[in-house]
Image (cartoon, rainbow, N blue to C red):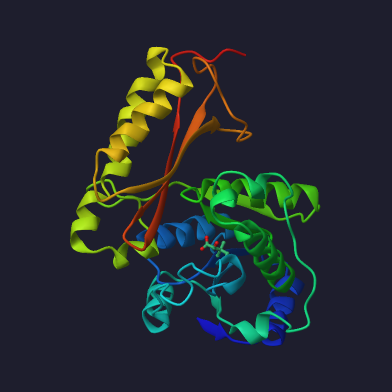
Length: 289
Ligand code: PAF
């Protein structure tokens, strides 16, 4: 497994692979890898095939963090990440520094004008502009046939799919199911920063989602479901609930009344300084066409 720090070097390698007709699948990450990331690498391998090339990127992207967010304290351990990727059979890693990625005179950004400004985009203004811009840059550098992203970042996945469609990027986007710890907490690089009492309390997210999933087929209304989940979360005194939303699972449009189609429940909750998200797609007993 080769580690590339320079755009020019990885581009040269990719040109060789492309000339040989080899499929390339990219898994963009911000490092501090966990089992969830490794499941993305396995999906990438399945898509690339044995003769294909799986490329992972490790880059904590400064432009997707707000001024008072956790860019500086975001966990990092590159040596451990590289060992995990090597053991997983990843072919190449792109791990540039910020100066290699961003020109100080750069003035172009990529933005999904509506989808990027709702939900998490409201809580973290500019976040999805940073995500869409770095993902576009990674796609332009690597030019993959396909790329894999986790469904835990549900809105991020929707933003990326929309951007790829709107800008005719021609990259297949593959969503990977959320991986959970044994007690239900969704895997996240940020979990390591939870104080022990917060780590225990944070299981309230998946418990609230389990309850919502069980309620969804009973004919419950979207607003009842939302208030039930919010009340569950607020009953946990360590949780600072940032948002609870229920949206159409396909479009992220608001939903009201009894569920007639799959809906996604999106949670954003802080514990101390640690911001966690989770989600679950829930289904009515019968879908109304
Ligand atoms: O999901 C992440 O880890 C990041 O948002 C991504 C897609 C690697 C862009 O920096």
